[in-house]
Amino acid sequence: MVQMYDPLVHPFPDGRQSNPDSYWSKVGQETPDDDGAVDSDIDVDVAIIGGGYTGLSAALALGREHGISATVLEARSSAWGCSGRNGSFARISGGRVPWSTLVKKYGPDVATAYFGELRQGLETVRALIADGIDCDKQPDGVYKVATFGSHVDTLKREEELYNSILGYPARFMAADSLRGIHEGPESHGALHLPDGFSIDPLKFAQGIHRMARSNGARIHTNSPVVGWESKGGAHHLATPAGTVRAKRVIVATNGYTSSQLHPQLAGRILPVHSQIIVTAPMTQAQVEASLPSGSCMFDTRGLLFYYRRLPDNRMLFGGRSAISGADAGAPRHRQYLYDAMTRKFPALAGIGVAHWWGGWVAVTRNSLPFCYRVSGLSDVFTAGGYAGSGVSFSVHLGTRLAMMAAGKPFETGATFLTREPERYPFASFIRLGQWMAYRWLHAKDAREVRKAD
Image 1 (cartoon, rainbow, N blue to C red):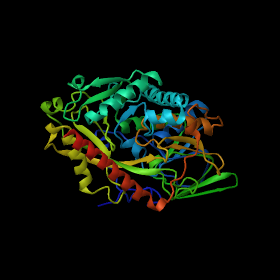
Image 2 (spheres, helix red, strand yellow):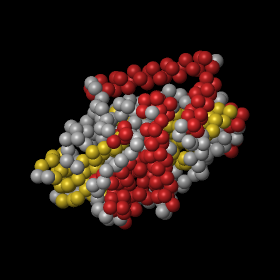
Image 3 (cartoon, rainbow, N blue to C red):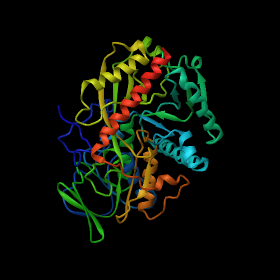
Image 4 (cartoon, one colour):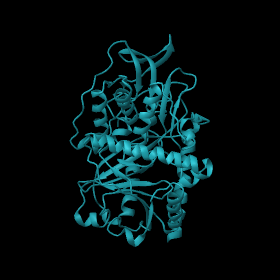
């Protein structure tokens, strides 16, 4: 078995590491033109490391809004990382801190400002799609579904917070109101969020790729940064066949940031593996007994699951399981998702799995995103830390990185966004801590099951 890329192990993604068996890569994608691998030494104004949502949207904004032609350095193919293999939910989200915790820690003004940034992110995605990106956008509607009856009161409190502090019309729906939307035994009510939709994430990324190139960006694929020196007023980014000398650098690698890329960036995020299965097509009876609605769904477990019905009536179902890249291909992780799916939707017992893949999301110590100028380096900017909720916010922060690289400050009332994230201590033990956290969350969910019985 070919080992997948692991940011804590490998210096960069290369052709020896496996491509994902992603559903998105199998449904008729037309790969956009690019500028090939870097094959000589070149001088550029702005270099962008990473060709996912953050990097591509930064390149597009630099060209379209600031008149700067950026150079994107992508280790593999455009959107090879999480941008081309995620669960497809574009919604008002970023990070993984509950709103009640965020309000308590930072206050309602900062929380409201952050919510405003997140809403802008979703509107940016809408605008890009309206500009001509065909990515199979589905109707709006997001449901946070109570897995256990004991979670209902928490969702009701969250509804009140959304409405009274954030000024957003979230609505709690009782269990009987979910009939015809979400079936199965783990459906005890839900918080309905009216804004948010699913897309084909790879088509969306490829659309931004095409727009960026049409606005002057050069996108070099198969061009990993294998060395980085700062000298003579420029950043020397070595690739296998040539060095890119850049006045300014945007680092947009997020969960795929190698710990060896640059010492100043190391230890700022924990790459967390998320996996997805996609089933064979469901029968109409199975559709009616599982997800009659095609909306975005996620549940209230400690280690949550996210899922949706695809337009061709397959079930997409994702969650966290593996810790390291070396272990990610173990069949027990696929079985873990399958068991969770059939527990949630018993009518799907026995259905085949057509696709199974995974990728890395980035989690910071405070579980919140970041967008800042890197200290100790001249004109280097970075953003990330979306914790698996970055389809829309990554695009938004890409535009903010472009603004900063163009010499304009990113001013926001969400003050934590522009702070350098703290390093994880004891980096060599970081995955032991993650394993222990997963064990605790599984035990917590098991206690909820026993209480429900």
